[in-house]
Length: 239
Length: 389
Ligand SMILES: Nc1ncnc2c1ncn2[C@@H]1O[C@H](COP(=O)(O)OP(=O)(O)OP(=O)(O)O)[C@@H](O)[C@H]1O
Ligand SMILES: [Mg+2]
Image: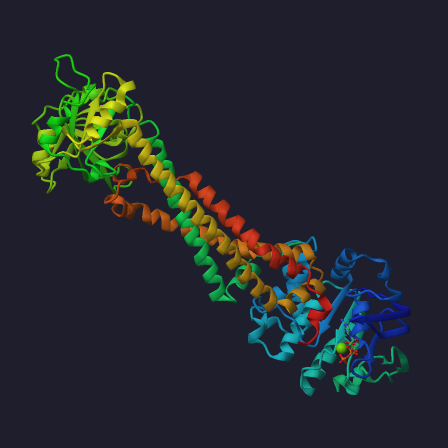
């Protein structure tokens, strides 16, 4: 039951390719309260993934500051960021990125191997995480023995098993059909409402975006619109 | 902080062919290395202290070893006329006519057969080979089915204690009894079985000898003796007995050197095989590595994982290579039996030292080969690798 506030101030990100500067984020300001479920929309190439990577400490901004909880990310070294990620962020990607040679349970266990933790406690945590995502009966299955939706559930279990403050999801339903997407989104909603996680989710799908409490629109390197969703999402999802 | 070993292990089976090839290359190198080292150790030990500087070894011209040399009886009688040949107490020249044959005897350790040299000698041999000393029992009677055995032979082969029975002869149908044990200053002769020249000739159906050894009364003038024997009136090939054994070990050193170079080249090949396998593995797992980095595994953890993965292949391959060399150590005797090396081949043994050396080579090959790919893995740009291909 932990959550962190996210704050981006005047964030700039410029990619350089063959001496040509490609500005992607250009003075972006954003504040996400602890425990909020925010969705991020915008045209392809507008920098959604880039923003998510900056907030997740996978990349450093060209300028400005990114704060997640107590961590001032732009001041941290690569090494510090790596250690910080293992404790504070859970990532969920469109492509799941499970390790093919490991079982569902072993995939979920991976992040825990970076903690000082007994094998028994790890087992217990893995079992709990898999139970939350509804895959208690698939613990020994390899990724290639699972459906796309099940793979994404394993990835979600892996993201939540360390009890992170923030969950960052980049088009988590981009590869799934409508019904499975709905299940995954319901699950993310649960992580937000039941476990109080701060969630930032990138999506192209307005229906998916409706699951958040707030949707922000990214365009031309800055936030274009910021709209609060009507609080009907949970009811709608469970109906 | 490390990834679990089963993660590495299972990944080895993802690219089976590539893994198997590397495995095979490393196993072969370990095999060759183990055989080479045991060979070198064995030969070096027994040849180092063999032969006397004041003895002349005579072989048929062109023969490099006793086993390929034939000397006729009338040639032996001419040898007696060579200058500076020492004489015994009874005034007879110290010329030892010898017949060297092979027999198979089980090892006392595991019962596998080894080729052992059997030397038929006349009593004068004991005056020529002055380093030979009886330490147990008595000498054989020439003409009787009796043998004496070298100390090393007694220790290494089954049933060579005094009173033991040794089947000898062309058809192994003559049973000789061991009546004595001798030492020979730690040299090659200690690995032999000696019996009377007439008995051995008879049992093995030979009319010729393989060599003659002359004792000199003046070692300094050996060159004159050698020149006389090599000259037109005798036409045999003479050299100092000590030179004969140095010559034998020089060939050993050549074999060891050549094989070492071969192992060196093979090891470089193995390093590339490992590198190739690991590069393929890294490139095939870029996203997986990126995900592990995202989760929080450090560059070091990724680097270590790939080093371990390569070492796993090499260590298992090393075990297979050593296993193979142990199998080969039984059959190797036959392999060498027709060569110059027969007499000494029995020394081939895979020892703890050899296993350690082989393991060392395998680990170094694994580490060096995997270093560049592992570095590449640890430096993968996470975000780029995570993007859809
Ligand atoms: N490493 C890089 N080098 C150069 N340009 C880059 C790099 N990474 C991203 N970009 C550029 O930055 C821009 C934003 O990329 P980003 O992936 O953040 O967009 P996105 O909003 O997530 O798009 P999509 O909806 O297609 O996922 C794109 O124009 C992309 O080409
Ligand atoms: Mg994107």
